[in-house]
Amino acid sequence: MKPKPHKKTIKNHFQKPPPAAENPSDYAFKITKTAVSQICQSVGFKTTQLSALETLTHVATLFLQTLAKTAVLYSNASNRTQSNIFDIINSLHDMSSVRGFTGGSTLHCNISGISLLRSSVFKNIKSFVEFSDEIPFAKPIPRGESISLRRNSIPLELNELGSRGLHIPRWLPRCPDESSFNKCGDRCEKKRKGELVLWEKSDLVGGGIGSGDEFQGISWENERRSGGGDLAVERGRVRFRIGEVGGAQKGGVLISLSPSVDGRI
Amino acid sequence: MNNTSSSNSQQQQQSSEARHDDDAALTEFLASLMDYTPTIPDELVEHYLAKSGFQCPDVRLVRLVAVATQKFVADVATDALQQCKARPAPVVKDKRDKQQKEKRLILTMEDLSKALSEYGVNVKHQEYFADSPSTGMDPASREE
Image (cartoon, rainbow over all chains, first blue to last red; front, side, top):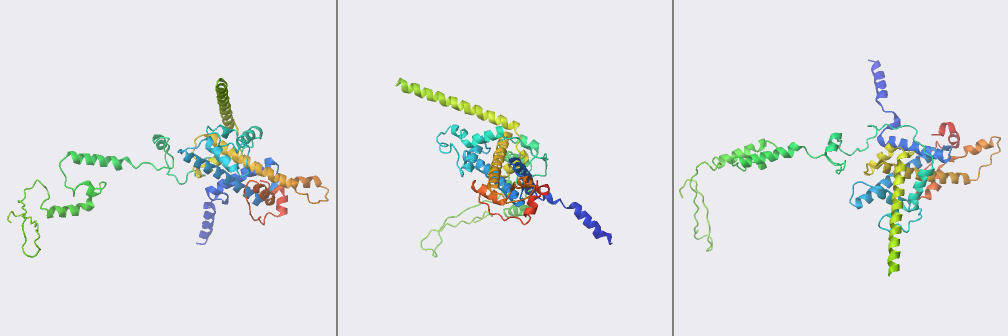
């Protein structure tokens, strides 16, 4: 019995994920940290304080996310779900408006979007790409399940994605199963073509989807009360008499309806 | 009238030419992004973009966002480096003076917060206790 706890500890040790990547966001943060430290090194820093590096990483992450969110806002404002380069440039202008940039005053003068491409923000990025040295990331990142890119979205298979059209955003759930609406339609049509069915027995009462077992009792009771319920069965004559009821009401004419199934009044 | 119409047509021609040039420059820039490998990997940028609700199948735009972020970080780091270099050096009467000068290039919270304040980011972050000068001065252990 004694070695059991020992075994357990070993098991736990192996089951525990390494502390380096506890969750996807932590993993992403660590990768960003590596990239930021690479950039710092390329700028000329020899060492960094841990707190400074983490702060810069955090700011870089926030910068990226704000850039993306602003671009999404711009694209949504022009009734699009997908963003394009002008949305990104617009959001870059918004982000750099704190410092100010050349060409910022004439940004909104031209509607055709020419002035967007002539601002110094875009030109600076162009020259950055042209003149700065490439520093590729230290290690290739596995593009697998380690980072769940769309945690909130419904997992879809590739076939399904292809079949449902590219214009439908990926975060939308899939259409309900065809059987849920196709079968129902068939059933309704069959009923319509066939003989008349009581309302109690129709799909409307039975829920339309299920077999309607839970409503069987009610419909059976109705059947009994109405004497079969089927219109085809012969019935007695029904008469209504309209007449006065003397005395009690003040000269009012009361219409009394007294159906009699027997045929006698 | 003729003069004004001709000048108008000239202006239109010029603007169309300018637009053509801009389009060509944009296309060229986007093409150059395909060959450029940013330090921030595409997978990471895609992760953050998806988190923010950004949808675009074009890799070049992902690269553009990566480049913009990289440029921002590089600019901040350069400013911090300038702050670091502009600070008066501590008087060190040591034989290994050159080595000390090299080791002085440390990204500290003080320089970083000064650099970030120029970009509209007010950082108020407590330094870690682990950020003692001894840990900062050791390049072998601290360099990442």
